[in-house]
Image 1 (cartoon, one colour):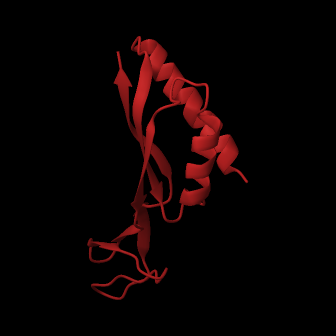
Image 2 (cartoon, helix red, strand yellow; image 1 turned 90 degrees about the vertical axis):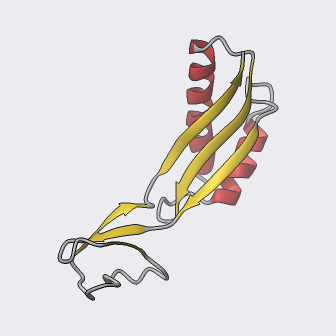
Length: 114
């Protein structure tokens, strides 16, 4: 389960930012997880709640925002959301598309108590 290593990296980033800002604690952590990121949101939440104990984020609320897969058509230049992994432009039916969002996990924000 790679969610454990992701959470360890996430907690390292949180602690680094808290240290840089002289924070006493972290009250909220918001992450964005793309549907094609390979990260299982429920497992990430379980791992975060397990490993946050005895860290600066021990009492932090963990918020997960799920990002849909967004594509851009290279033929008609339209952006659209992919449903059911049907990678065809919804406007012109082209297969000449690029995925522009929904493939990664991002630490969006951290609320610190100073």
